[in-house]
Length: 126
Image (cartoon, rainbow, N blue to C red; front, side, top):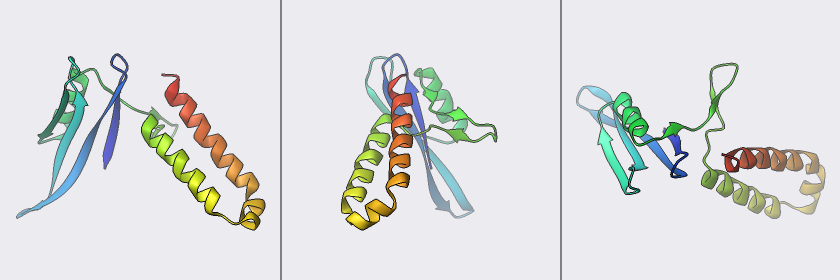
């Protein structure tokens, strides 16, 4: 699992990655945060708890990417590079479709493009 963060001052992304490790007492978790410190130097460190990782991200000026919806779930959590990659992959997928498939699903394809553009615009307007 990965949580994305953004620093509005440096305009850089960071993240907290949760990796599952299995110790002799069952499942354990490892939390790794990756960001840039206040002088712009990349920092990557493994810590013991999610609270420690979040505290470090806040210390370096990062806030979690996304908004809470009415159900309490985080939305708009993809970073700009992730959205750009998604757009490129979707273009490749559409280009790989036959003309008949495209014609049958034109409205759905257009709707997905519109939705990706909406998320891209929200991310670039930060």
